[in-house]
Length: 40
Image 1: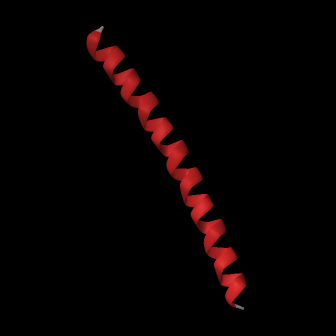
Image 2: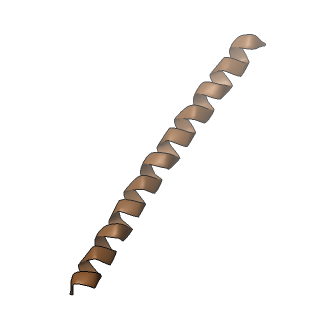
Image 3: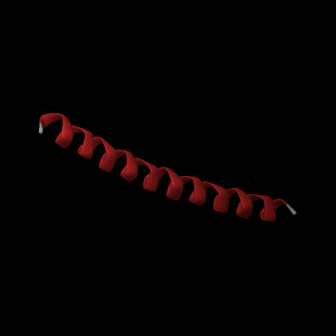
């Protein structure tokens, strides 16, 4: 029962890290476009 909970939390943390990484990449792309358009 305890090991199942630990595995569940590990999967949850992996999911959060994956979402956070892709989210930061999207924000970087959006900021890049904003800088590009504001200069032009």
